[in-house]
Image 1 (spheres, one colour):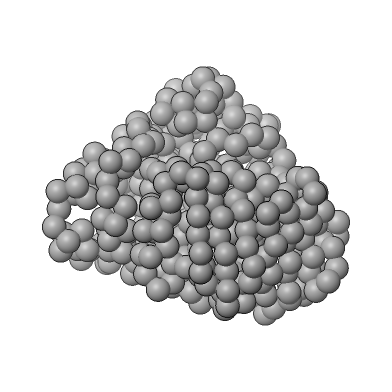
Image 2 (image 1 turned 90 degrees about the vertical axis):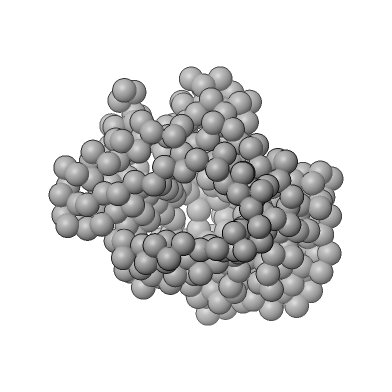
Length: 366
């Protein structure tokens, strides 16, 4: 086994979710991620925890969405509702044999299927905000994901483990340093109210007064590197152009432009897969409102890889998610959708807070 896999498993178990003896932890991933799934399971056993695994078969999800009735798509197994109320920790391991296996599925049926897990998502976020559940999501480098990122597998492995500083002597020390610097920024951001984002084809205003900014330094996503909050739901005004493709549910949507009025997306366009974009935004009442506003701070990630785990963390970018708000940050919007889209702010751009420039051309100025 690549020694970096075992090292990553140790960081996830001991730092990210801080797993304790006797706790129930669920480990979820596709068969392509089995090496890391097994490494995390082994580390959890060594801690004295109770690990359970769920191996996802993406072909089965594709079959259900293509052949299942509406009732089957909307069905939520009762054990899923019980499980999310009982587990103490959750580890999501991403990595696929085929990143585009949902390309032939009707977008409206994908949206219907997503709705089935809406209550699970809301319980998940509620328990996390209350400190009852710890979770982390990470990437296992697979051939499919390497191809998506236009890299060889070995280069992609270096990219994935490098972004998390797994090759460093003490990765945790690095992330604790990141947490300390971001805590300084958050102390300032928590006093801010009106936010104004300006960039190429982007002029967007929103209000975050009274909302909490969250310090992301390897405890929920790994790798990490961002600060985020949930905007006040009815305050987004203006428009934003996402310079990077938006990837969600195995579909890539390019050249996305959203226009907001009173917090709601009132017009959307895309150069590719606009019908899919519209279907997702029509998923439920909350899907056209913002659930998150964030700024990426990981300058180790220097290229776009079509993987939101990395792309939303790119230093010099911001991302906004339509859909489910984050209760931890004070977000109240509810939706089965949570779709992060990334905007490049490295050139001719700025963010102001209450009229003062706090971010310019990819860097904080505070």
